[in-house]
Image 1: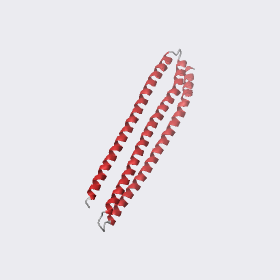
Image 2: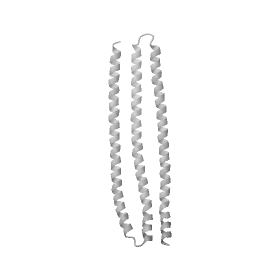
Image 3: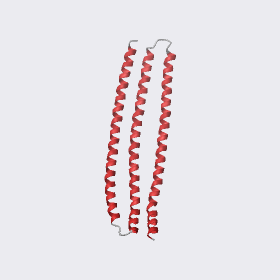
Image 4: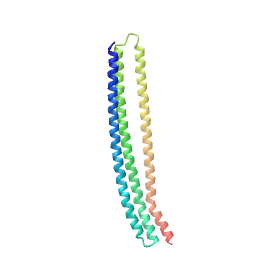
Length: 194
C-alpha cells in the first residue's frame, strides 16, 4: 500500500516533464513561425517599396492622361497578384503552425492517457477488495474523456478545413477580379480620353 503515493508522485513528475517538453516544442515552433512571418514581411516590404518606386517613376513619365491611365491599369494586375501571393504565403505559415500545434497536442494527450491508464491499472492491482466498481468508473471516465477529445479534435479539423476552403474560394474570386481589373481600367482610360 505504501507504493501508491510513490506511484502518484512518479506519475506527477513524468506528467510535468512531459508538459515541459510539449511547452518547449510549442515555443520552438512559435519562434520558427514568427521568423518565417518576419522574413515574409521584410521581403514583401522591400519588394513593395521597389515596385512602388518604379511605378511612381513610370506614372510621372506619362506624357498625357491616357498614357497615365494605361500605365495605372497595367500595374493593377501585378499588384493584385503579389497581394494574392503574400496572402497565400501567410496562410501557408499559419496552416503549418496550426498543424504542428495540433500534432504536438495530440501526441501529448495520447501519451498522457496511456500513462493515466497504466497508473490506474497499477493502482488497481493493489486496491483493496470491493474497489473494482470505483476502478471501473475511473476507467470509464477516462474512456469518455478520450471520446470527447476525439470528437472535439474531429470537429476542429473540420472547421479548419472549412475555413481553408472558404479562404481559397475568396482568393480565387479575388484573383478573377484582379485579372479583369486592367481591362476595366483601360476601358475607363479610353472613355476618359474620348
